[in-house]
Amino acid sequence: MPKEQIIASLDVGSSKIRTVIALLEEDKKMPNIIGVGVAPSTGMRKGNIIDVDEAISNISAALEDAERMSGAPIHHVFVGINGNHVESFDSKGVIAISHAGSEIIEDDINRVLEAAQAVNMPSNRRILRIIPKSFSVDDQRGIKNPIGMIGVRLEVDAHIITGQSTIVKNVEKAVHQAGVDIDDIVPASLAAAEAVLSRRQKELGVVVIM
Image (cartoon, rainbow, N blue to C red; front, top):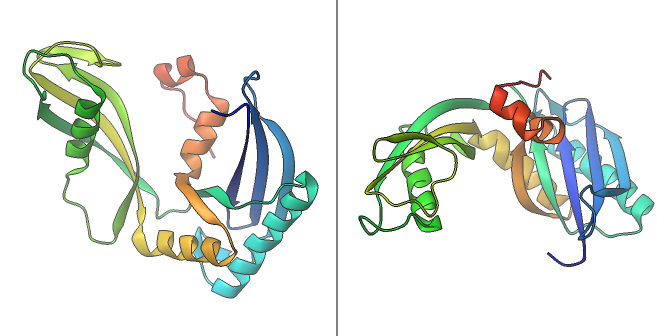
C-alpha cells in the first residue's frame, strides 16, 4: 500500500445517503476521516430505488458535500447496501488439492470457495459476499487457514450473502450516473460487523443488531 491512500464509502440507505472519505496512512492503524457528506434519501425505500433521478441527485449531493469538506475528489467508492432483499445461507465446497500430497496454496482456497458458490440459486439472486467459516483438510476439521498444510482433499464451510439482482443493478446504475465508479458492493450488515466487532468477538459468535 502507498504511504497515503484515500478511500471513499457510500451508504445507500432508505432515510439518508452518507458518504465518508478516509485517509489511510501506512504508519497508522486507524483511518483518518477527512470528509463526510449526508443527504436525504428521497429516491429510496427499503433499500430499493423508487425514483432513479432523485436517487442520483441524493447520491451526488452526499458525494459533493464530502468532497467539499475533504478537498479531495472522489472517483470511486465502496457502496454499502441494505434492505430485506439481502439474504444469506450456509454452503459447503469440496475440491481435490491441485497436487495431491503437496502444500495447499492460495489457488486451492479460491477454487474451494468457487465450489461453495456453485449452488442452485434463483436467477434473480446475486452473490455479494462469500465468507469462509472454517476449512477441513482430509479428516482434520476446524482449520482457520489451511495454506501451507499438506493434504489431498480440501473442504470449506462458508456463509454466502446474496441480494436481488435488479435492486443491486439499479443501485449500481445510480452510483455510476452520479459520476463515480464502484470498488465493491458491501452488505451494510457485514460492514457494521467489521467496524464494531473484534476478531475474538466474531469467534465467540457475537452479533450486531441493526
